[in-house]
Length: 99
Image (cartoon, rainbow, N blue to C red; front, side, top):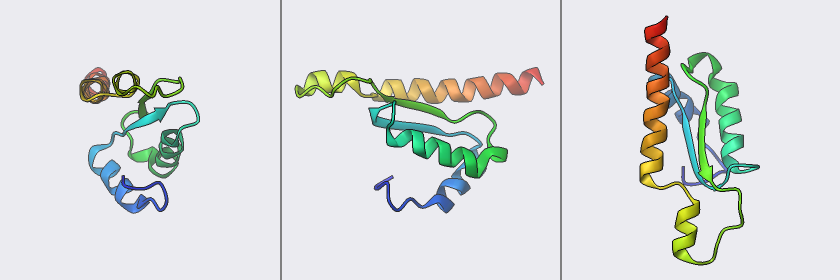
C-alpha cells in the first residue's frame, strides 16, 4: 500500500477472495500500529473468504533506534516475511488435510 488514507478496500477484498489468506507486514510497532486497523478491517470485510486468521508481522515494540543497523534489527526483514508467509500457508494446508 502506498498510503493509509485512502485505502482501496475493493482491491484488498478481491485479493483476499483469490488467496483466502492475509499477512499484514509493517515496520511500525505491532501494538497500536496501522497494521492492526488494517487486519481488523480486512477481517470485518472478508471473514467468510478467509481460510485462516489474518496474521501480522511487525517491528518490535520498542522505540526505533537512530542507528541504521540497530533500526534494521527491529523491523521485519525479507527472511522474516518469507517465513511468516510460509507458516500462514502451511498452517492452512495442514488444516485442510486434517478435515
